[in-house]
Amino acid sequence: MAKSLRSKWKRKMRAERRKRNAPKELARLKRVLGVDGTGDITMNDVKEIATVVPCEKLKQNPAANEDGDASPMDTDNKRRKKTLLNEHGQYPIWMHPRQRKKIKSQLKKKRKSKQPKGLV
Image (cartoon, rainbow, N blue to C red; front, side, top):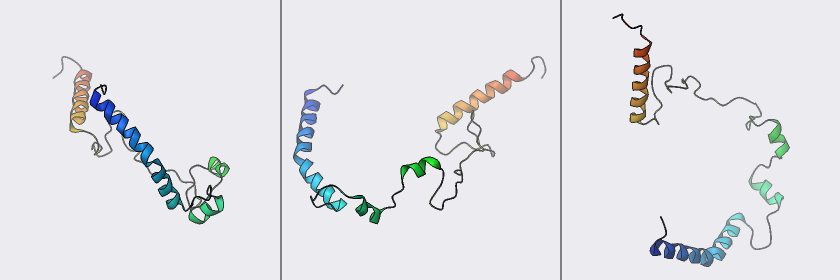
């Protein structure tokens, strides 16, 4: 796909537009960053805007947050891996209803197969 004359023309024109707009975008980026064509940004300028942390400090304690205490993230660990049900029997909100139905039917089949045969 994407080999038609129209798509080739569109790609060509997009490339031309990128070339034409590149100087304007660069000037806008420099203006936003506060560099008025005088060269690269120095770290002293960045330190005024943001907190600069050396990478060695981050490698030592990646879980530390701004307060300095290293606490694990609060995640939903009470969910079963296979069925994705939580302790109340609810599926996650992002799960599609069709996927829920498929998992329910698979669970139902397993329950039926585990019952001893001959007993009602």
